[in-house]
Image (cartoon, rainbow, N blue to C red; front, side, top):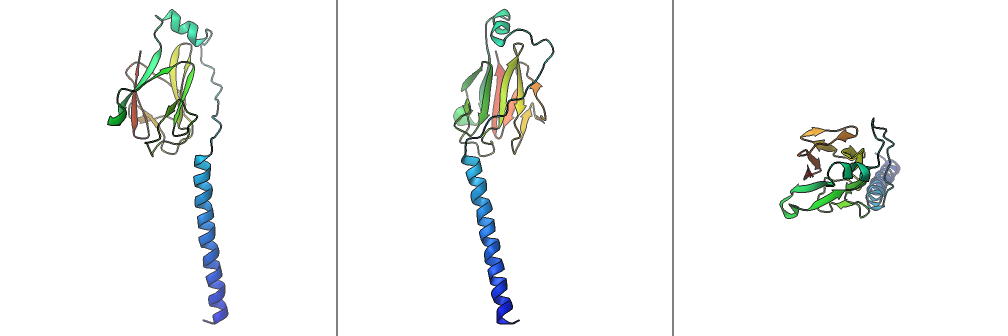
Length: 157
């Protein structure tokens, strides 16, 4: 090969290395940047009373998520008022910075008509309910186990 062809190949290789590094930096910055949480407009049949009213009618106890795993966070409890978000981002109600399998804004747990629901927000590793992946908002029942990354939570009242 001539010296001119080798020089062109060197510059092409260098350009590919810089493109690769650019993509890595862009991805890291996108993960660090606070993102807007999508609000899904979900119409659920029978959703006529505000959640606070429905909660009072059912005995006044709010729904809560309790962490079962990882061991260093077992027992932490999060009340589900109207909505809470789960993720690694600082703007989330449940911040899971130590779980590398959780996205910046991973999922949301919300109430409609006094009943709790969970929705995956397009996370990389998905959200599971009792071991099954969810693709749309799903109603939760007492004792259900929801997994976000490696963090497992149970719904209690």
